[in-house]
Image (cartoon, rainbow, N blue to C red; front, side, top):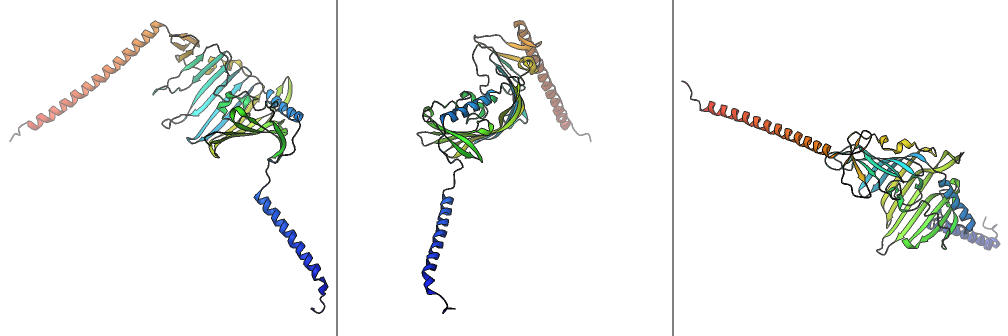
Length: 390
């Protein structure tokens, strides 16, 4: 075999061997580089035109504008250093008013179960009623009626359904911003936009800075949902070496509704997941599950009045007025009634009389028990002293 080998082929074989080794080495190098620098799911494509950005943002705003009223439930789980809180809301609203029922566990472990508080709010009304208001050791039901003349955000301190998923914020903090605060960015000179892949879907990524808040904004708009916001990250940097990132992820559901007397489909949040991180460590996590009972079906105006709260007769009423008011009020005969001074005196005297009678009965009972105890002690004492008869 050796005698038949053509030694002239050695250079050719060596060249082929070098080529194979080179190809294999290049492949391994690319693989190692890929493992070291994995492809970012949000790798940017070339910038997009201002017209495309404008149309996308206008579409996102128009999609939420179609929601004029609704009836929905929110199930919320919040995780923080204090622990896990579970609570829920039932919200019925239109453009001017809302009825919000908040159901939450008692704030103390000493009591089990849940308590319920209902808010009826609007430009011309504000009622608050709790089935068990924890004012002191005793549960006292109080109906609070705000009769001040003022312009109010009807959802202050409450989740606003029209703002769900529009901010990287806790749901109860939505009133801090206007609904389209993050979408109104077309006039920003530093606005940049590009098409990126997010979870397998091509989305429009808008980026800009909020100089007044020392923060960077990144906002993903998904064309599948008429460019509704599916993700926002707000990165804030402070002088004390604390980096704060607040982010929200939103999923959507298609709801059949009527808008301007026409049947249509509206993309509305199905879930909202919010996180606040400080130096990469989660501080607050909130998960919201949204159940839509109806959209744009209006609200029964009777549910915006006090009688719908089923307030028990005699419930104290706290009136919040522009001017001081020393009167006391009570819910009586289906309306707010001022307590008559004679009724107050009579009620006070009756209460004093009841307390006096109760105190008298208590002391009489103590006295009788002491007398009986004394008789028993004397009986055994004299029995012991009695001389024995032999």
